[in-house]
Image 1 (cartoon, helix red, strand yellow):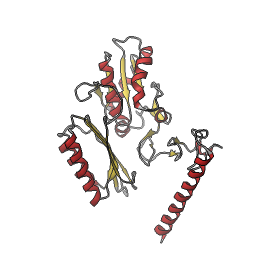
Image 2 (image 1 turned 180 degrees about the vertical axis):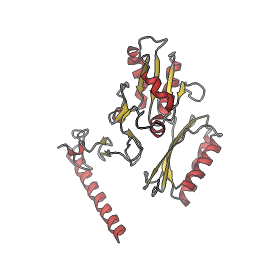
Image 3 (image 1 turned 135 degrees about the vertical axis):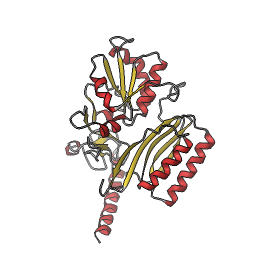
Image 4 (image 1 turned 90 degrees about the vertical axis):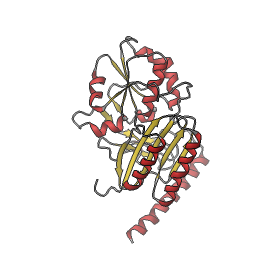
Length: 310
């Protein structure tokens, strides 16, 4: 941790959150940001809180204490990481209908969800021959890292997951009454909501990885680790490796997809302009705009480096 000044906390909690309290908390957080170096992305909804914050340790403690107060000291499912640099530009707070968008009425994880499985028991569960393992994340997240032999629903966003359940899930079940269904995601929120959906649809033996991949990688030794590849995160780091350090991926600023070092060597790749995912998605005029934007970014970085050296 030496030299790492920023503490990064990912968190979520499902609980009834009244609109007047949402607005009150939002205002208090922006007051903290105005006086301190606080950044991140938080999503508030009537079903709870979700997001990631980045700041020095003492500021993080202030924010967590405040969030605990509004959440009624419910479990915030906190995952902690550290960085030498900010991983967000500023603090953004969004008020939405759901803290993670599924789009299905009547889903209430705070009242009904699956069984939490901690990191220590996760390996045993997913190795069991009567268990199917489902990655509830988006296809581009799965493509850069996942658990061995897990099922990829190949969704573009979480709101597509319910349809996959209706159309595909039963085909993976040898016995609907006895097969274990184990689900996971980055930090635990999507797989927790997915368990609530499956319980509503009558499925049994439903489990989810407590704290998600981030907690698992923090808890499990290299020798016992069954996660393969890197874990996508929704900030400037793009992905984290097995040691929860910034990984080898960058973001294509044209389409927002994660691009590996190998992908950057492909003929389609032009930094800040296009990658192999989006080579046919944009017009020549779009690419000219992207090229000019990248030139401005490069010039700004050059100025910052000059100031730093001096």
